[in-house]
Image 1 (cartoon, rainbow, N blue to C red):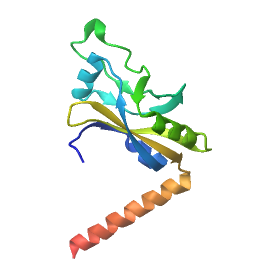
Image 2 (image 1 turned 90 degrees about the vertical axis):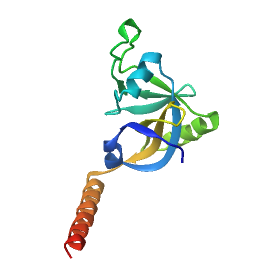
Image 3 (image 1 turned 90 degrees about the horizontal axis):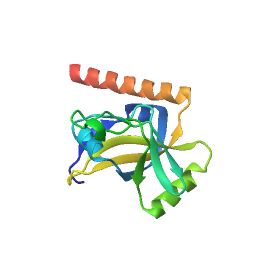
Image 4 (image 1 turned 60 degrees about the vertical axis):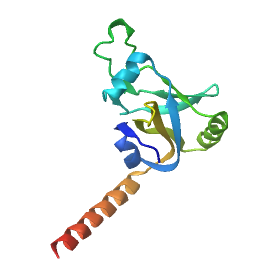
Amino acid sequence: MAERKIITNNKKARHDYFIEEEYEAGLVLTGTEIKSIRGGGASLRDSFAKVDKGEVWVYNMNISPYDQGNRFNTDPKRPKKLLLHKKEIRKLVGYISQDGLTLVPLDVYLDARGRAKMTLAVAKGKKLYDKREDIAKRDAARDIDRRMKNK
């Protein structure tokens, strides 16, 4: 796999959703937005994606204003377009038309060429008992590791 520099990730997504399938998408950004991302000024908290008129958009992704951007800075929460192949978009439309599946951004990173990319997942929401099950498994694994370390 090519070299990546992860800028931000959505830790809550893996806690709240079962990840069915992942896609890599490019981000359409302005100059000040990419400069802010390179400086680590992005957040995926409460963000989600939608397919609208054959295009995929991510909403509520916060890119903080670039310090030297002055009037060229845009609204930090504006919807950002994602770049995917038409075949992938048609596949996503098929997935999200199924009940209970949604599009969730997992992380934003810079690829080896310095371009901003996003990992987008088709996900199904977890119920409360699923979350408790995951927490119990994680605690059991930690306990086993702790005991193995002590022996």
